Length: 244
Picture (cartoon, rainbow, N blue to C red):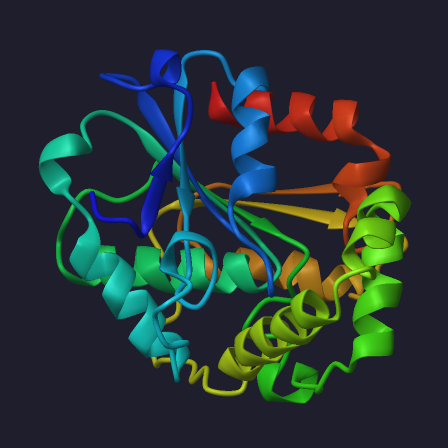
């Protein structure tokens, strides 16, 4: 696999079921890959978008389709044997879903299931309506909502703040390039996670059911958009149940 895919600890690699993590806007896969220590028996693979981390020298993707196609073209099917799963949070959920559609369209092995987190279903929402430029103040507020300690360190570096604002806005812009296709259903299980205090309406999560011909489930956790920060144990235990 290319540097698009970052692997977890060596002891968690090999001939195991795999879970691919697709990060939210402005993020890399580091946070999600740390969850690997709770997912015994799984190889954890983080998807790195261009313009950050190990791909900092690369230009941002201009469209969602461009990003999905680049990920699809980088998949090494010889290394993907047995079951594999996709987990995407927010923007990452849409990327995971569109990638699964492309895989299915090309008659290749599909994920056993997709876990869609904190994103309205395509049928319920025009993502173009969610495109909003984020400034430094809003970004810092978001950082404090995730981790006060991390935010304190973050705000000491003005260059880092400026870079992160650029990354977040480049990612958010991808939502505005999404075009629903005529056939938006998958023959793959879809499990939806969301926070009860998030701004996303519950019915916008429920309508993900319209995008699968297979099994569907909805799981709600106390908390906002990043509900797993507040209720990690409940979240990770639910995820482990789905992956069994």
